[in-house]
Length: 256
Image (cartoon, rainbow, N blue to C red; front, side, top):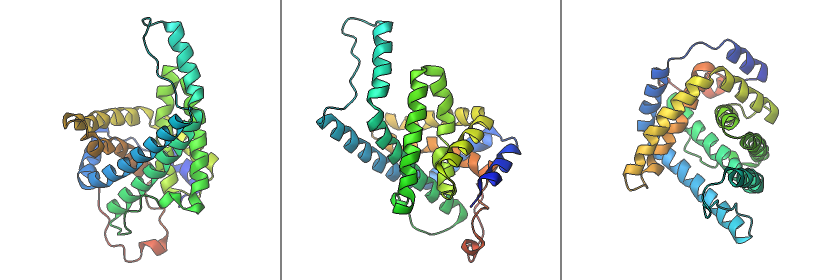
């Protein structure tokens, strides 16, 4: 695994990336891991539903904004700010689940790319040696995103890119502290903000095509939107941090 100085060094000397190559690689990998992505999204949706249902039962679910008296900017802004704060407890749990399941999905994708047969463990990062760190990352994720929401649209769009690197950096470097993962995510996100946002936007549109299949197809296709981050990390940081003992008998790596 990489140490934080090693990550910084690689990010500081990052090479230019080709937008088309990232999109093409994401599509190619999706053809092989779409079912794995579907299962990750399914577990995430089930967890999200349980959280939302539980908070609704105890009366802590965020309220919906209704245009009963037409649209009023002042009322909307008041609702928007209050709801961003009111939904923090629920968001912390949802962010924790998201990071855990996406990290597992990225680990599964890496094993596929490297030709490693370790089984598809979607609950890998729920183990006790990882979960406290996952929860802290969920807490930090919620704090940053909530603050960005309170500052409204542009800051929120900006932080979405660095936040999207939390899972991939944690999945490949669980040895790092929470603070180091956050710093590395923002450092990489800032360096490759435009290509990350553009690739996520394009693959997000591709993923939304699942809506054409009566809506339910979205669960099968939306995981493609998470793959550009995987390949940008692979090109910038790489997977060579695997211990030598793990490489014994691994055979040739697949190229994507």
